[in-house]
Image (tube, rainbow, N blue to C red):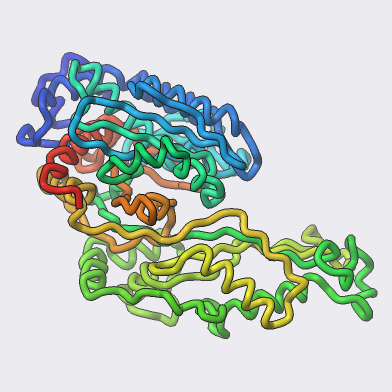
Length: 503
């Protein structure tokens, strides 16, 4: 049902999902403002989706940064500037509300590649469609990862200010356009003197996210694995042992194959089981799970049934037929060496009898505490060199280490408080198996808490028909307006929790 300004105060409180006892002044007025600006917010999200920044394709890299800068100014940030890097620029913005507490916000304004032929509607159109059993969703590349949640957060800032109030916290925003290529140059943004100085005054940094499950429950993540994307290449460009181009396959009797050479190199990176990393010294700095982390994983398993997880992933069993909880512990605690794709020679219909002149593998590492990016890359190169693979070219395209945040930080305490006040069931995950560059804030020299937070629901990140829920048919699950109000409440709860200490 569409929201209208004639809704009663009680109805507005109901749609926002937070009871009147929450510590948000003039909450009913802000909720009404959120309702009034709803169509404008949806249009702004659709307009943003229509301008994709894709770092891997160098698409809209200058335009995307300028668009992000303007979005910040439109949301009330007094200052916003573009920070140049060796690649895609970042954006830095500040909002001084005269508050005692300053909160850091991280945005990504880039999105993944897309093939329009795989989508049910044009990926840049932002079509609003009915999702059976869930409500109305906006479909488009970047809808949930991360433009939908980020637009809901910006809408929250606008609603507070349009309602005649100052924000309860000051804000420092940093945004990048290379998250989808593992944040290649984002450290340069944070290292800029004015950015680092502003961030050092914050109590922590969070990224808006749509974190609700279909049953309305939420999840708090205390960290994330690190990620490194890289390529291994073998061919005429790496050694004169191989042809410069594809040649007739009969020559394999006297000329080495780049494809076989790459396969042999790849085979050394994992054990015979096909999944355990075998790079020399790989587990040297891997921290085991604590008992508290194991307990949290077991508790979370109760809220997320095994059969639902298998159905979502399209599998019937876990590695080594392990029990569900064991598989979850592995998901959180194990570093991985994954082959994303292999490219060599002819892949069309039938055969072509060629000896490829080049073979490439696209891989990624997922890292856990206390591994680092530099350590992982160094060990990979040493491992290959020790086995004589000097003809295998290693190109690292981006990456960062893992991050961890204390349960008792103000950022996490505020999430718990908000969920408890609203009656939203939640679980706590020690570490997200996916990655975001939280370590850039969490690690030296800033050493700040860093987290992901948000209500609302979406799916299809990196896939066709990516979606973000606009109107929910289930009162337990938040649509756009409710998610916006959750960010309003979160800002007030963060200010409240910060008074207890900045741990």
